[in-house]
Image (cartoon, rainbow, N blue to C red; front, side):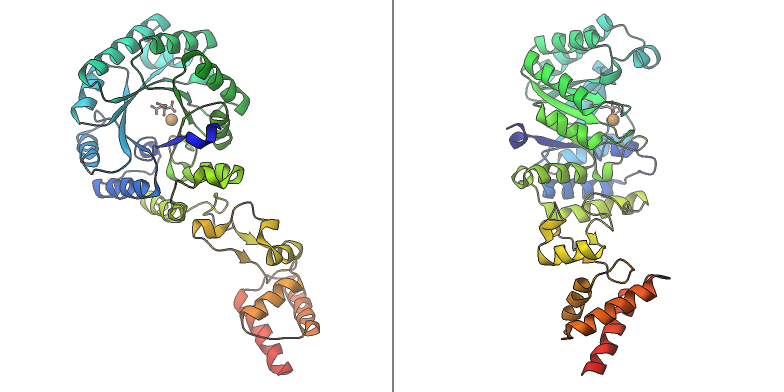
Length: 380
Ligand code: HCA
Ligand code: CU
């Protein structure tokens, strides 16, 4: 099964740094890398050492931490970049070059034969300098590239026998899962190499596309915490985990899932943003059940309306009670939680009172509790 053997390339420290409000200090980068390592991601991708002196120093520092995760850096398809990357002692180098007509014209100005020459030259240079380094070659904007161009480039690079992995990138977030599956399976079939998928979320398919890539035989998926990155970012770590967990919990057993809330909260704090209310697993409403019918079933067996068990992620389920859609099972459960033993007719009366009052304005849990205590006194 393809899902049994995938690895996460966590790019919060590269793609994530390209998010509008992300400027991580050295201490913060170390905190992020250490937490991701504890979570269990296999690889951590960091900004190119050419970006700035601090980026280079931080890459060196994190490579030297001795984490279990392999540290990769991300560079353009140039010998100069490769030399600077290798000098840091990094474990892996991710090389990228644009192949879409848009990027060939406005980014590097190279034709496809020139892209192939540059790619093969840099790969040969890196292998010569560092035979052990983990080497990946990726095209940028793969899904707006001409298929014939893409295949020429990938096959030429694969033929060198020098790279460990090929990457495909949905740089502007336009690919459909079916397109991702088609390209990935074609590359698996033609090259037999490991395949990495990097997907932006501009049109909401980043998680679905990552899953489609894995189903088609990809071995690596890029993520960032909360999905931060250029524009509205890429496949979120938590989203990928939720997606795979609901297929089969065993696929994500290798990760410390209870660290997800901390990871998301950490990045929200560092980037001065809120965790979105509807975020996978850690959003404020991710495990709130509201309608009476839902509450009744969830109280009997949470799996009725939960594909994910909040306990596995260290978060708590909540039954919302003080609203017009409430039901008496939820009210009775709340009474039990408060240690109140009220007869069913009283519970039903309190439920009706809540519905009447909450029809104009929702009631807080404290107000619901007051109502229950007041009725308990009367009964008592
Ligand atoms: C970038 C573009 C990139 C690269 C992805 C990759 C993209 O910011 O350099 O190297 O796999 O989305 O194409 O993030
Ligand atoms: Cu990207």
